[in-house]
Image 1 (cartoon, rainbow over the protein chains, first blue to last red):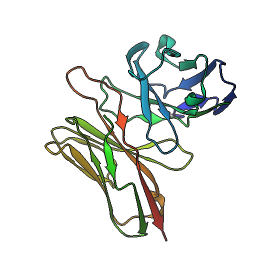
Image 2 (cartoon, rainbow over the protein chains, first blue to last red; image 1 turned 45 degrees about the horizontal axis):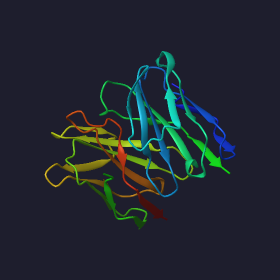
Image 3 (cartoon, rainbow over the protein chains, first blue to last red; image 1 turned 30 degrees about the horizontal axis):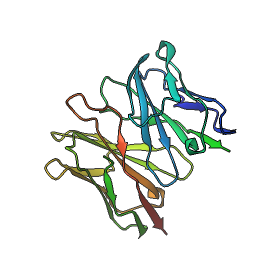
Image 4 (cartoon, chains in turn brown, cyan; image 1 turned 90 degrees about the vertical axis):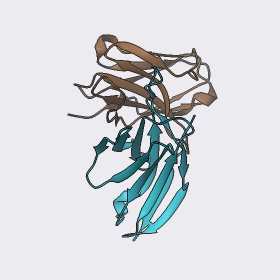
Length: 115
Length: 113
């Protein structure tokens, strides 16, 4: 068990560019969550997958955000036409089970800075 | 709706006790507690479920008052390693509601030697 990993750890981009982040969950975990965290705030839920199916997206999630989890393993989060307001820490978490009532293991995050 | 945590910050001497509260305007079915140290990922502490079930670390204690829609995390005989920001997350909600957690803004805990 090597834990949840995320790549890259840091990303600096210019406004208007597209960025893609990757998350590798703990191998036997079937649920994968994406959160966004800004300074002084708790993690904000973005979306989650159960296996390869994306079961929920936050109502606050812009259409510029898209996530995939092909084959139910790793996941990618893409942000198109980045804006300065997208600057944040993007956290991935995984859990095992078919409900949200289980411990989520968080990865170290990808810090995005949009210039 | 985001749960409300109190206090926003607390400073303790090593060995002292602390209580962190989390309240919601929505009916609670579960409360999840995490601790995050600066520059690190949140780490799971405990889940409290409607009906009384709890999952978590033995050294952590918490309560869940369904009627008051509140949860409290109890940190006794605090150690330096307890320092960090504590977040409560609420959800999922029954009846087809969201499975993603909604976190509060956090309570900053500083333990001094």
